Each structure stands twice: as C-alpha cells, then as structure tokens.
Length: 136
Image (tube, rainbow, N blue to C red; front, side):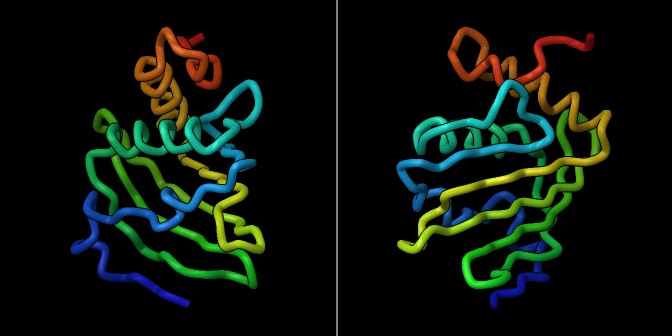
C-alpha cells in the first residue's frame, strides 16, 4: 500500500497511474456526472484530463491501494474559487487495468459548479450531455 501524505510536492504534478491503464470496458461515474456513466477509455481519459485542467491545485491527503483490486485517492482542490473535497475510487480488473472509476466531489454547490464548467469544456460534443448545462 502506498500512502502519500506529502501533498505539497504532488500538487498538479501528480499523474494518476491508472489514467494510462484504462480497460476497454472502463466506466466513469461520479456525483458531477449525469445521464449515465462515461464509457470507454478515450471518453474517460478525456473527462479526467479536462477535470484536472479545471483544478487550481490538488492537495492530496491519501493515495493508495485498498483490498485486492482497489485504489483510492483523496484530495482537496479548487475550481473557480470554490473548494472541492474529492474521493476517487478505482476498481482494477484481473489485468490490473482500471475497469471502474468513481469520482465524488463535495460540497454539493461546488460540485454543481464543477459539473457546469465541465459542460462548457465539452459543449458541442457527445460528452456534454453528461454534465449540467445551466443553474436550473
């Protein structure tokens, strides 16, 4: 188990190992995602990369394995001045690839802002339907 508590050295330089090990049938879900999970390695990679692009920083409190096939990340970030607390869970398949990704952001008001910002990033693409379009 790798426990990372030196968050100041990681910041946005941290690159999740699992992002380059996405299974062909990977799904991505989270509190900021609507209309079903993100499906497929290209789509999941695009969403994660876009999300990281919105983050002002990542202050990690933990990264490490859990159970036989799990990995978890816990960090704080900020988007448009709003603080988000984030928990990422990765479920690995037998080949060690990320098969299921779940990303949860809190508090709710900041998560909703984040989802709207993701919609702006993906406007005009099929992925836009997975994020909130406005404040209604």
